[in-house]
Image (cartoon, rainbow, N blue to C red):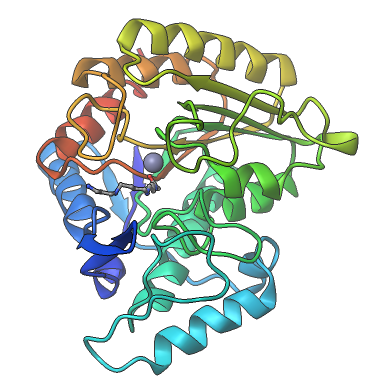
Length: 317
Ligand code: SP5
Ligand code: ZN
């Protein structure tokens, strides 16, 4: 299958995040994407392509201009080695800005859009190895290691060509993606995630969030308790896939997180590596043009294996 990747993400490597007022090591490390692409290269079965440049208007279709401008100016004005912990246009303390943050974030969007464009000409699944991730980025704020919402920008682009279903299987609720399409009946957002009353982002992802106006019924949340394992997860995935089938989309965008893994350092679920192949093959059974967008997953030791296991489940059986 086709993988879209660039090492431009290396420009974004904040050393710390702020947790309860203290600086702690940044979990969203550059090594995450490096070990995934290394494992994919070693597998040798995939075509890896570089992103092309898309106009900035694609980002403006999801994010407020004043937020985009803020991120660009603050990022590019920083001296080498400096880190800004912004006071504005931010929803939590998990989005430090470095000199390379803006460029890396734009390239992550280009990775997602390049992959989306591939879908228009080929029926094969395409994997966008985005870093930084995106699903917590809102219309006018960064947060949760996310700056621009890669999956939302790609889904917005695809929605000009047909109905889009977004399946979010990151451990955390994709608040930014949900809100981007909250009023729309032509883009379905379905998320499986840890119960937000005990897990980031805490303020969204509850079952009573179902969309608004014409969009009512086109947002579906499946919060699950901490400790959720393979069997419970697969059962909920089955329900989510039925929702998607019922919607009859033309395209499927999957926000893929590997932070549901039992050994994730900031996780809380108990999924094992082999289940990622099962998740992928159930997704492939929908037989939709499918864009996979990388979100979270922080166990650097096992990420390569998780990604290749997941991708192996997407191959035709
Ligand atoms: C894309 C994605 O998966 N973002 C997740 C953001 C979660 N941020 C909250 C992390 C809180 C844990 N860090 C504190 C460590 C203290 N030991
Ligand atoms: Zn996550």
